[in-house]
Length: 212
DNA sequence: CAATAGATCATCT
DNA sequence: GATGATCTATTGC
View 1 (spheres, rainbow, N blue to C red):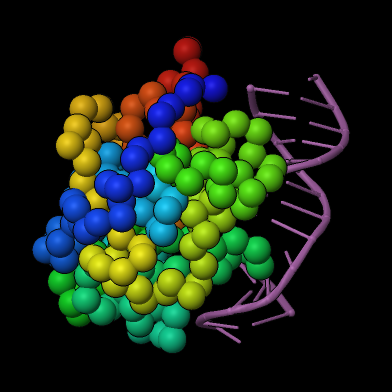
View 2: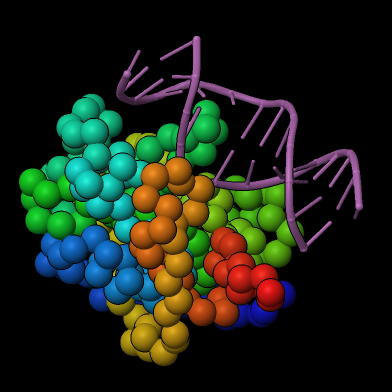
């Protein structure tokens, strides 16, 4: 397991670097790509975003928003820069960030984080993780590790206890693209983005097509 | 290493 | 009543 220094708390106890709402008010795929390398902060816990997926609007049958406004999906049609947290498989919660201008649905699923701060608390919340790299290496794992639940649904991530921030050297990496994971519809759409070679990415790229 | 089963419930049909 | 943007343990090669 890679050893990493935790980031100093004083850097996440201020509002420094919080991404403005305009960052999210763009096409979901652009926001998904640009979210890589940014820092997700909740209280004293923080992690670097290393894997995301974009979910679009009415044409994207894999997206919750494709069936229109329901009690669950209404936040997707609201202003950007808010959290959309939903419960899945009777057991897990997934964090999305609403993208696109108000009235246009779209969001970014945060799929994996590289833990940076609050590692002890993450370990307590994820006792089954065997290494630090596994603490938040999946959409259900990261909400557990970060203490994010449905109570954050609709929360404004440009202020408050749950925020996303830029970091000085957050673009020194290569980005890989692939289809999204675990969906039936629109399987070929290249809407998954991840930091190449990062050990916290949930699933590494499949080996190329079989020879012959 | 790959495939699979089981856990468990909000949401929508 | 079926399904699902998942995770873990277990089984089998």
